[in-house]
Image 1 (cartoon, rainbow, N blue to C red):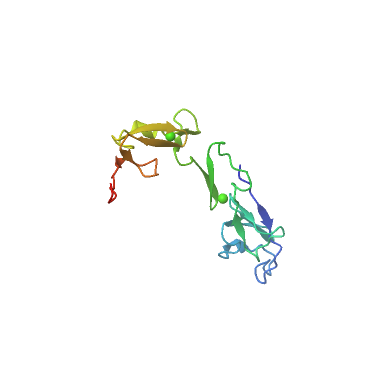
Image 2: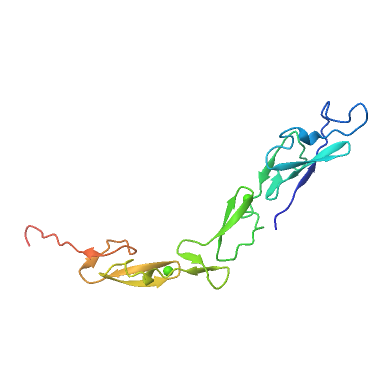
Length: 166
Ligand SMILES: [Ca+2]
Ligand SMILES: [Ca+2]
């Protein structure tokens, strides 16, 4: 649920208020009067600005002079509706719910599920056993092979360096 913020313009702009005939002037025809990420609404004798959905005013007493509507960080303010096992990624004007590395969107519900990397026989190659675990996998090398400390890479034949006195 994104909050909608409204600020009323108390600014008196010369020449923008009532015309001599007492008729209302549409201040909103002035480009950029409310700044970025805001909409201008004309009223009889005045006007007001409203931040677009996903934005809020930068200060409490917000008028058109400051012209500031800033992005709401829904992730920090905990107003997002991402599920517990999803990551909230703030973007300008909205937010995204993403699955962490090693997970993908579930086909059965709207959450995330582990990717079984071992279903791809090529992920660890023929010289290792692949074991899947939540969010990752491990390649365990066969005897005589090594992935040299990177247990998510393929294993290569270990090279034996002979010492001079061997
Ligand atoms: Ca945002
Ligand atoms: Ca996994």
